[in-house]
Image 1 (cartoon, rainbow, N blue to C red):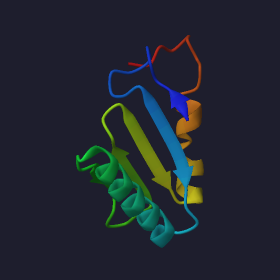
Image 2: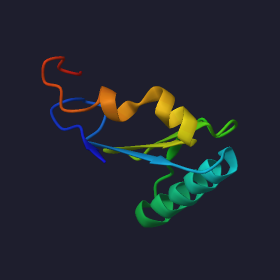
Image 3: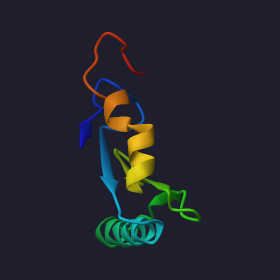
Length: 90
């Protein structure tokens, strides 16, 4: 979980997680989207489900990134959004 308050206007929190395979990532995304919809009554915006290498769920103030492990390592979002005040992310 990465706190984005003061770093981005996109969301307040970013959650990054991994699945073991594309099928696992897709399953996690489907389950999470349904759980959020059941809890809030609002549908979740999903991107990337056809390939499920990297699926993004937009839950309003929370953005969830689900990756296959090698894709997560390649993009390394944790490093990009780390507390590096010298670069000031928008």
